[in-house]
Length: 112
Image (cartoon, rainbow, N blue to C red; front, side, top):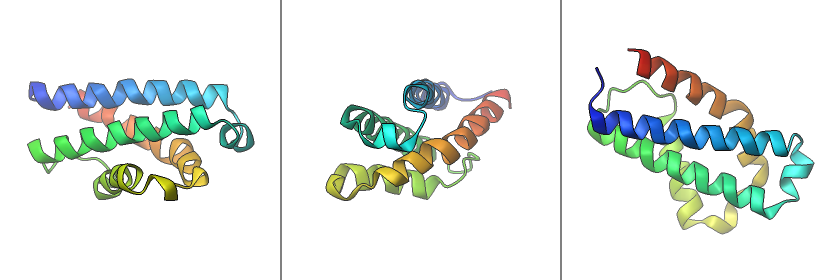
């Protein structure tokens, strides 16, 4: 059974992924996504939250099986500290490719 604090962070990430999926539905193409600053800022914020939660998970248990933990935390730091260099194409790629993998891994972690 997962510790309560760890479960809380997993649920936080799950909630944010649900909201990311809503954004993906509203903006089915990169062109639409890239031309809406609210969508871009929403995804940036959600990725910050995921990065912070993953960082906290790592502090609780550094053996938790989440792919690319360092990259997730580094992305959070990039968005926060170098916000003017965040590429919308990278955000789009992350929500299309990496977020579904993270969602699958969270489900597996909760079922352990």
